[in-house]
Structures are given as C-alpha cells and as structure tokens.
Amino acid sequence: MANKKPSVKKKPTIKEMASVVITINDKLHEMIGVVNQLDRVLGMYISMKGDNDELNKFITEEMDKAKERYDAEQNEKADSGDISGDTDGEGSGTEGVREEK
Image (tube, rainbow, N blue to C red):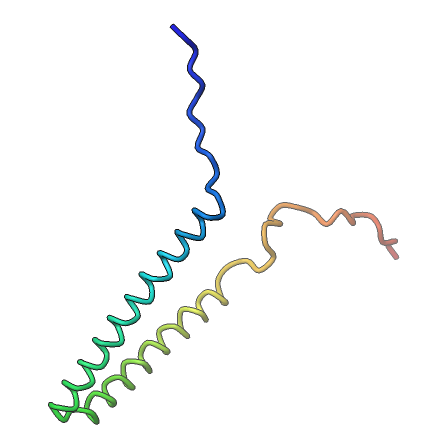
C-alpha cells in the first residue's frame, strides 16, 4: 500500500477571503432591509389601530422592568464572588519580613 499524505487544508487566499466578506456584507444588508420594512409595516399597523400612546406606555413599563432586573443581576454579581482573583491559598510571600516589636 502506498503512503498517502494526510490531507491538509490550504489557507484561503486574500481573494477568497474578500469574496466571503463581501458575500456576508451583502446578506447583512439584505437582512437590514427586511428588518426596516417590517418596522415600517408594524408602525403603519400601530398607527392604523391608533394605539400609539398605549404601546408607548407598555414599552416604557417593560423597559423599566428589564432595567430593574438587569440592575439587580449586576448588583448580585458585584456582591458575590471573590474580587481577589485566583489567589486562594496563595501567600504573598512576605511572612517574616517585618520586625516584631
């Protein structure tokens, strides 16, 4: 049996990388366009129903609730946990340096 070299993937060329980046950029812009169109349609629907004030009130309340939850989570994270890092059980190496009086 002949020895086969292991298949090694070659690095993509700059041209190939540029092509991929351009394709991703094009798809992203397509998605942004779709989101903008959906936003316009939703805005037209809300205007048609005349629920602008009610929707704004609801969104404000939900944003306040979300902010309160986020703040509570951040406070919990700040209150819990060791801020000293990975130094558990490690000494500072200064034992016996100071003179005892």
